[in-house]
Image 1: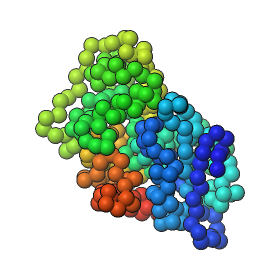
Image 2: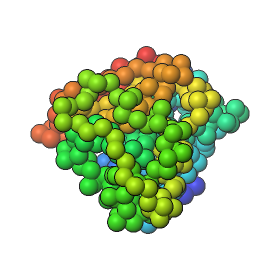
Image 3: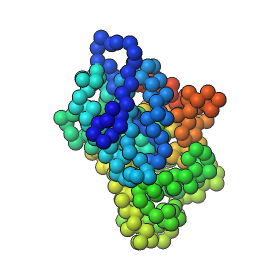
Image 4: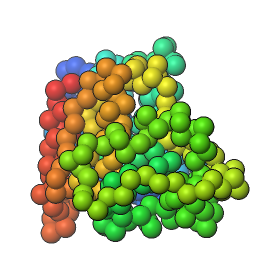
Length: 316
């Protein structure tokens, strides 16, 4: 189907249900460039059947034709339409879960930020964040140093995709990495949420270098200042917004450049009293979830993540 201009796919178990089902709204990963409804169909079909839920897949528009904030706007508009018509889709308004992987996890967070200000809509019961991207400011966190060359998401790939998505010239990469786009006053304000001090020491390898930002580059800052928006770096949301978030399953992988994004966000949620179930996969890597049913390409960590998500959702 299409909700306006946004392609969506609704998956339900074949068996009829005497009552309204739980609803899962799923935003796929792919850094705004890759991924599709077809790529994630197997995963979402499995979620629907194993949790006896109706799963709405949102096929937001992507690069190269569409840049930020199209992804966020598509996810938001499709979600609002679905929430306004839940019973017609056979979904229980009291049991709706938002679920997203990678940049789709970022979309979950940014959409919920908006939904908290619309009391007329059904409240989201829970959010499932699978190695989400929530920070585009500090790239000197331990995981950015330790896993910069780990597939499927190397640092070069991350920057290539996100700079294209955010319409930032790739020549600004060195300034972003060096922290030269961070004004001193902003760092003083947000250090408490963005600093490596928020990452437990057990996640630091011996060769980790502490944050050391280069001289401020005003031209680079002016071109990249939109990375401070809550749609791009949702970890910066005010406490009063974070405190309204629903219970959360947060999945992180050890061998993932975005591992510390998840750890930063875990602390933000817990500090505001949000109930967080954290599932950390020691042998996991970015993108492993989509491989769970790919036979010879599947990894034990892939099945671990999917089983953790299913177990959590079935408890809602």
